[in-house]
Image 1 (cartoon, helix red, strand yellow):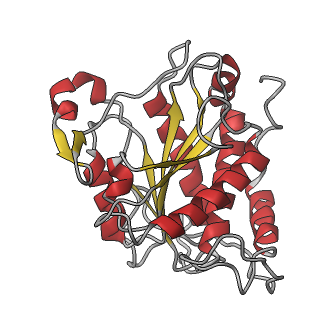
Image 2 (image 1 turned 30 degrees about the vertical axis):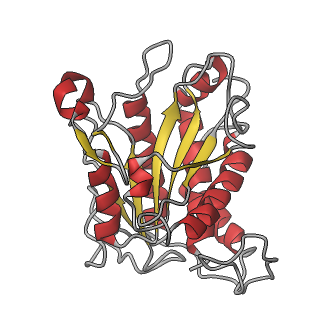
Amino acid sequence: MPVSAPPGPRSRATRALSLASSLLILTAACSAPGTPSAADPTAAPPLPGPEDGAGPSGGGAPGGDARGSDGGPADEGPLRARVVVIDPGHNGGNASAPDEISETVPAGPNEKACDTVGAETASGYAEHEFNWDLSVLVKERLEEDGATVVLTREDNEGVGPCIDERAGIGNDAEADAAVSLHADGGPESGRGFHVIMPGGVSGFTDDIVEPSRLLAEDLHRAYLEGSGVPHADYLADEGLDERTDLGGLNMSDVPKVFLETGNMRNAEDAALMEDPEWRERAADAIARGLADYLMRR
């Protein structure tokens, strides 16, 4: 394991205690979506400890009789009644279907390609595989704390779905938050993560810009603290980037961001991404950031 990697994965009980502890710093007066993010927090009362529960292994339909992996109800835990959509970027079959993924689809005011192949590390660890591995880990953590979690794809073998379909899954689920997990393919000399949030696109993102910024800030803070990866030194503004050209954001009706977890073409970032123990820690950080945001609602 690289020396820059944090220690190995913690137990589920430790994760649950950490989440419960982190939620104590949130406020009864925490900023609701649309409230300026500079609002000062005040101490919140203790929340119930997290329990097992969530949707079926493929994601499950929100609002149904979701069950945890041990058969327990999903309404036990601090994230009960919250719905999260996790979008593992790209897919394992995209490279074999160039015509399908190059077809244009709605992306807001304009159109873009259905999907792309994604990046990979120098050793050949593909971004689509990394995104899937990490998304499954984040899903498990959120379900343990009572959330209903929907994945935009069922496995790492298929093609797509297209960017507008990915956004549509979050809309249909009426998600409280949606995050698209990626790894960048930037210059070899640059390292670090960044969070992409939607900018204002009239008729498309007007109602999600502010809550998405809050989501981006919560994820940024938790990931910076928990992953051991610095914010990107080759683009964005201290790890936060606003864009108006991404169909996955423009077509969303729910608060949504992209998390570029690091740069696959940078040797240091790539070594972390290839380390299963680090992916556990990264999933902890992402789940914590999502929980921080969800407890505002």
